[in-house]
Length: 224
Image (tube, rainbow, N blue to C red; front, side, top):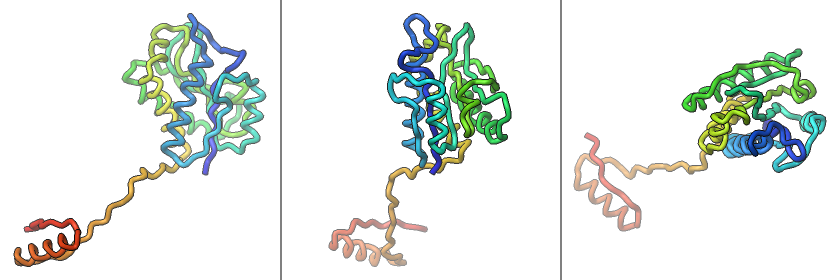
């Protein structure tokens, strides 16, 4: 079973980007929890979190935890600031395996397709020297979902339907990129028993009577 770590950026004493009472750390955690819950509900995968509440973690804390957890993938979730709008994804701008670039492409495109109805700007697949991308030893990716200092983006961030669209698509993208096996639906199979075929209807009716007398539900179906 593959192991994935989801890292909601910032937290605790570090709120991240802030705007009119909105704190990035809260949006990061809300989105990360949607991703986690969708993955564990629908796929055979082990999901770890760097935080599940408002804890303070340094960048080194996050990377050290990731590096000792034998991960197959690390996903860092952030929300942007600085006057822009839209969604973008990052991988390390140094040497990375081609697998990392493949993961980014699959996950990024899955998200963009899902949030297209919300008319979100696609800011593209990018590369940067972010600490959590540089210092983690497994394929790693960081997403900046929207901008907390853009009123249009914030309106989407507080919309449950949008957050679910982002979270579900991130989870589906991760599952597709890493070829995670889907969980069985949980429905038990039904097996049909055929109690005979007859050329004379009376014989069929007699068989139905016998079965009903023995408390077996039965009926006649004409085939031709």
